[in-house]
Length: 318
Image (cartoon, rainbow, N blue to C red):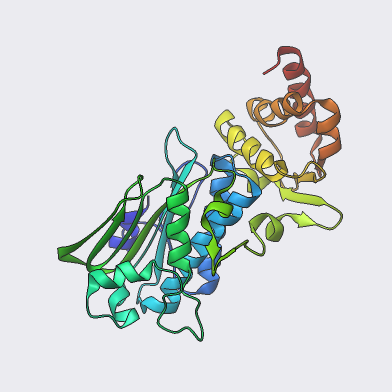
């Protein structure tokens, strides 16, 4: 997870988010926050089957909670973010933490338990002229709709919502010096936004999402650089993550076409080629595959490996 760096930064290197293990990401300003959120979404696309709507829901929640840190917490170390997929479930859990003034001081409420309870209610914020106060509320609703846990700890107050939706609030004798939020989102729920993000009596749809910002081109074309699909091109495990990333990009709109750009990639393994392109060819069928997926800037050696992988996989099937 990379935690030792934040305990003793002179001895341990700063962690990097890779394709296998989640790492703690620190952010000190809006630019670093946006980079951290994008890394989390990219990792989620590699590890979990996601609809376009659920990508937007996850991105909205992580954006809201991480932005709260910079807007309200006055944390001298900024914020910390980590996200991982629960084993054997399509559930993503993310945690955002800071070392700031806490929810009660931010809202101007003396009772800390009352403060965390009010913080997850709709429209609660310290300054309604600049903030709508729906970040924690909407994130809490996403966890409820997912039958996932939600936790909000700040100073002496501990709010915990079980998978059954039961809320428990208790006064802790040992304070957490700051605030942290834990939220679980069920990515297998196709109507997550419809069930959860109702704000001001109206369904809230995030205006745009990661795929639109990072991959959409004119004319209904998505473009992805091969290096965004995974960290390495030498293993079947990397291929599994790359294939899931591609499948997620194409999942909801059969009219979209995807260009995979292999610029500056000079070698891939046979197992990687088979896991990604061989299996996609068989899963989608030849005509649909050729209509929807094209490769650009492919080195001859890589092209040969992909052609062979498709031929062999077509003979053996999935």
